[in-house]
Amino acid sequence: MKNIKRLVTAAFITVFAFSTAGCNMIEKTPEAIANSTVATINGEKITRGDLDKDPNTIQLLSQVKQQYGSDYAKNDEAVSVIKSQKEKILDQMITNKVLEQKAKELKLLPDESKLKSDMNKKIDEIKKQNFKNNTSQFDAALKSQGFTEESFKTMYLAQLKIQSIQTNISNYLTKNMKITDKQIKDYYDANKDKYTEQPNKMHLAHILVKTKDEAQKVKARLDKGEDFAKVAKEVSQDTATKDKGGDLGFVNYTDSSYDAQFMAGAKKLKEGAISDPVQSSFGYHIIKCIKKQEYPVKALSKVKDEIKKQLESDQKSKLVSQKTQEWEKAASITKKEKNIM
Image (cartoon, rainbow, N blue to C red; front, side, top):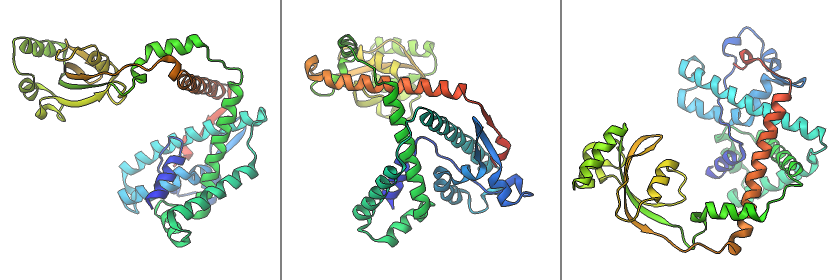
């Protein structure tokens, strides 16, 4: 079951949504509700039925039932969450529809028969590798995620189609794109930490406070010789590390999970040094660099192809994002959010 759950999660683009039936539209028939328009894109409709059949909606309906119970529609919190998430899923459906229309205009739509063939091969592979072709186990795993085999195939095919459309549009928009040697060299010079023989690391500790004035007072205490760990235990507001004297352990130079301003301040420090106040999105830090492990930078010739691929990928993503926003802005889009619930 975990394998199916991972596959479903990986197949989704970005949206996780909840769904409900009827709600404030009880006076309408199920057919009328399903046929009601929730959005129109250049004259093409997305109906409530389309929204409620979206794989994100189907898959996570079982989860909202688990969280709130089968009568979740009577829970105000659940209904509020459902509504906001369905608005997000609709926005993604609108974006996908704009891309599909543009792909049709540019004759970039994928071959449906090939997509179906690819889908069937992948599902057969899943059954064989994860369920040893045991159909009942496969069906049970799908059911636990809110799917039948038919609805799972519909979801998977839809995802293959939009992914293929995105790839085709990306290739079309960037067919004449060139990455110059200067761009590669500039990127290399600005990001040498990414291209060391082994990842550079620094053993850090920090003290987090709310204001710059508090941070300056902390620094003054440390400058007078007070123990860093002792001060951290007394005043740091980072509850995850204060009892450890602010110790963060070894942190890779390229670790993107840390605030960029924090990392910039930490990397400037020499081994054994303590920083002045460093502002981040969390407040103000006093950072101590306990130890550094730095390695030689690889020669540009060894990483040139890698950097070129990275720059191509970054530029493609940026250009496709910009064009998608332009196409959405130029499209005639209306939403009827009252019909979402």
